[in-house]
Image (cartoon, rainbow, N blue to C red; front, side, top):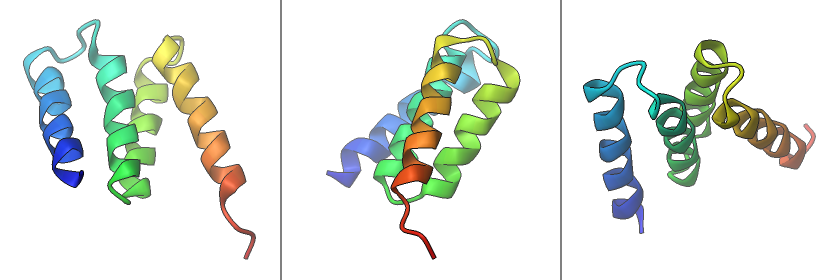
Length: 79
């Protein structure tokens, strides 16, 4: 199970490395955030989404990231 997400991380990182700023970059950043979340690394996932929102604020992927961050913060138990 985790191997699949780790492999996906490698593939999405390849997109960022090979095509920096390319049209697939926003989607790759969004998917990296999802993968990190699924690997129980929510802070790293959030960093990916914040980078996405900062660099591509008008993209569909940034809208998805904003929605996902709101949903995840709403589902956290209160301290």
